Image (cartoon, rainbow, N blue to C red; front, side, top):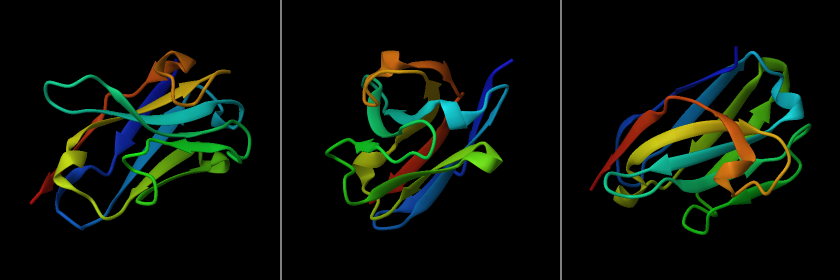
Length: 124
């Protein structure tokens, strides 16, 4: 049974940082594209960052987070991270981890497994 469990969300002031973690079980992330998506209240889910399978040498970011967020993975720990710096109130959302096979990293249909999400709230 595949399971993705996110953690690390919380309340932070604008300009602050958070690091989200996603621990996978039931699959070896080495062989999967891994992504982070987010959904703010009243908005559709949107792509945040993605890391290609194996060593994650290919990454992709939404324009809104480029230069502020970094996705990384430790395959040996079956864990993917999202380091978020210089947070803004508009980053407030539920953040979801996802695992998938081939396809573009920014497309949600690339991913077949999703976590339950972790809330990130950025106050102004």
